[in-house]
Each structure stands twice: as structure tokens, then as C-alpha cells.
Length: 431
Image (cartoon, rainbow, N blue to C red; front, side, top):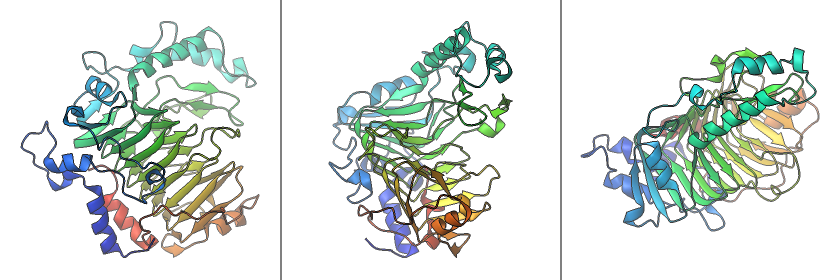
């Protein structure tokens, strides 16, 4: 492993990206991928590129025969194309709305609502002044909310099978839904903008924290018991429906978005690289519970060369996993910023050569979630070398150990932190 200069890093990263849309803006037939895009779609994750390159490695659908190379233009085509475990390459072409009916017409929240549900009735029934704060909602209106949520989930969740490469062309954009990788292995998702997986029926939990919280269901990409997954050169955001625009109910934000790319429930061997995350709250949760169980020895994830642009928290928040976080660019200038690196139960984060453009106190970059240690070296904050753990310990209790107890080996290179903003801004995200 080596640290390399900016020019060499940029050239190598452009070669690695292999995303032909930027290099070939004009195509003979907009409905079809170019030869360069077809070659790129057969690319496996390179050796030593993070945890997903270990074990059996991550090849996705690179071995697909021609009968299993598909270009999709709507939800129905996408759902059919990504199903099953046969090796397959699925191109996402242009805009695909995942919240649509059988005729590909957009479905709004009202279309999913159970006849016995209304938000006004819910707010009246479960106002803490009426219901209290000691128990979660129950009864007919909560049951109707659950049925409404189930109606939406049947449409907006797209189940992805094993041995799949999903890659975008023609400015690919998936909106109003979630790619669900549940119990699968060997999946690649590249070069797609994913936005606004809004939950029409968030759950109210008055016992969540001191004042209660609204919690939503859908991640833009959700890994649940998934292994050997590569998420690369994508863009994640809330589109034109940010949580900041939602009202307050019961004095708490009515939060309709969950994670951007959550990795939970014994998922393992994942690389998240060269993506752009923007203007999102709960960004990347690795590990879903503090309970010791199936996650122990799993949740090994590499997060490198991503741009986190005014995301408020969880970049990432980690439980249990050995998570390598290096060469990422954090822009944290919003007053809603909470933290970047969440140190959870039995987590082992190794953070190296990350760059932070920060308006908040430096001690806020790391947050304590019942963990004990984090390695954070080579960090730059507003251009200055900074010991993030020392800054955290000076401002917070309990102190964190600055040695997470392991050193990553699955890396092809490490760029100097000063080069990261330019590299990631040019090359990160979908093309």
C-alpha cells in the first residue's frame, strides 16, 4: 500500500471508474449502452479494493451471457431484470420512478393509504398530551398506518438477486424507492443517482430519546444480510423533498427519509467508493442493534473516496464492524450538522487521511455511541492537521482509546488528505 500524488491518483481513478457516459456523451442509439459501457459493466471489483475484494471477491454479473444483459427503462423492467441468482448485467437508462402503478403512472402517498388511515386522525390519537410517552402507539389507527406502510413497501422496494451488476447510463436516476439487497451476495451498484425514498407513513415512537422521534422505513440502498457488495460512483440525495422541508409534529421533525446506504443485520465484505452523498440526515448506518448476536465478526466495510456534502450524521455510524474509512471529503457547514463518525458498540473504525471542511467544533466530528476506541490519523480539518480523537476527548466524556486495534490491508493506495477534495469532487458520484 502506498500514498501517491494527485496527478497519478486522478489518472488511475479515471481508469478505474470506466464509466463511459462522460467520455461518450453522444451515442448512436440512446436506448443502448455503448461498447465502452458494456466493457465497464463487466468490470469486477479490483483486487485489494476494500473489504468487498476479500473472501470470494465481488464480480457481480461480469460472467453474464448476452441473454442476461438487459437495458431497463421503467420499474417493471427493472424488477424483472434484477430478480434471481443467475449472473446478470442490468443497465438503468434515464429516469425510473419506482413509485408507479401497472401503467407506469406515478403513485402519491394518498394512493397507498388504508381507508381507515389519515394523518390528522393519527396525530389526534397519539398526541403525547393524549396518549402519553410511556408506550408506542397501538390500536386501530396505528394498525391502519402499518397497513398503509405495507401497501407502499410492496411497490417501492426492489429486491435485487445475487450475482448482479446494476449500472447506470443516460444519466440514470432511480427515484421514490429502495434497492433492497437481502440475504444475497456478489452485487455491484454503479453510476446511478438515487433520490427521495420517502416513507409516506413514518412511525411515531414517543420512547425514542427524551422527546420521541418519527422513524421511516426505506433506504435508497439497503443491505440486510448481504455479502460481497460494491457500491461505486453513485449519487445519493433527497431530491426536491428534503427532510428540512417537513413539518414538526409533536415537536419533532416529521422525518420521511431513513438511510442513504445502510448496511445491517450481518452484512459483510462491502466496499463503498467514489460516491457523492448530499443534504441527507441519517446517511450510512453499519449495524442496526446494540445487541450482541449475528453481527459479531461481520459488518466489515470499506468507505473510501466518497464526498459527504452537508450530511448531518452517520458517515458512517458503526456497531461491531471493522470499518476502514479513508480518503473521504466531509463538507460540514450546515447548522444541522451533528457528527460524522459514530463509534458504536464493539466498533472498530480505522479512519485515515480524511478531509473535513468544518464549521462545527472539531470535537463534534466523532460521536460516542457506546463504543470504546477509534483510530483517526492523517486528518485535515480546514486544511490543518488535526488529532480528531484528542479533540473529541478534550470536549467529551468518556474518553475514547485512539487505537481501534487493527490495521487495514485491503487497499490499493491511499491518497494524501490534501488531495482528497479535488479528487473526490471531480470523480465522485454518478456520471
